[in-house]
Amino acid sequence: MRRALAVFGLLAILLPAAACAQQVTVFAASSLQNAFEDVARLYQQQTGRAPRLSFAASSVLARQIEQGAPAAIFASADEQWMDYLQTRQLIVADTRRALLGNRLVLVVPAANPVRAELKPGFDLAALLGADGRWVTGDPTNVPVGRYAQQALTALGAWAAAEKRLVRAENVRVALAFVERGEAAAGVVYETDAAVTPKVRVAGVFPADSHAPIVYPVAIIAGHDSPSARELLRYLQGAEAAAVFRKYGFSVR
Image (cartoon, rainbow, N blue to C red; front, side, top):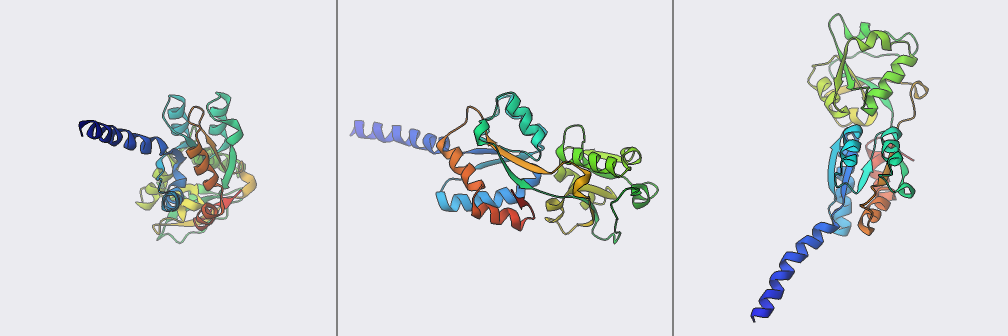
């Protein structure tokens, strides 16, 4: 009897540990949050396994991975931060895929009816008013900010715009500034603008004004496993694609 109880006790310790070992941690760009949460729920319904999700700016996540954070899958909002990890041999290179695409938009608080024609000569100052400021991710390290700088530079508006920029730590923080009316305008992804009724799209930046917005995904070196590969396949499958399209992403 004692022996049976001892075996039972050992199993009680080992089984939760085994279940935990199957859980896959996903580090994903902030703009992916709503879509990835929905995909994760579908995946759990089908497999009984719930991925652990962590969202932040791609730059923050890539550096955390570099420092040893236990992520198994990384989904970046640009190629540059995935390149950063790949050059350091921190991803499983043959698992890297371009998963999604997006568009860059100018948003304003929902009550503002303004429309902006985003073309060369665009006058951001006129849209902001005398004291207004605009917000996007910090262009020095946040993908949406880099895209915004590229687009405004192409339109000849960056030099003036930079002086009135609020630099946010990620795209969802930038979106919140506009939602609360703390910024007169913001540059975010089209999919971010779609998740809240508190902002409206005033204009869409021309696709050729900035680098293509691509979300690559890959397994992290040292965390490759059948569970990680299964989830990565699911992210690239038809059911996940339907969710991504619902949120406005283009599926690669």
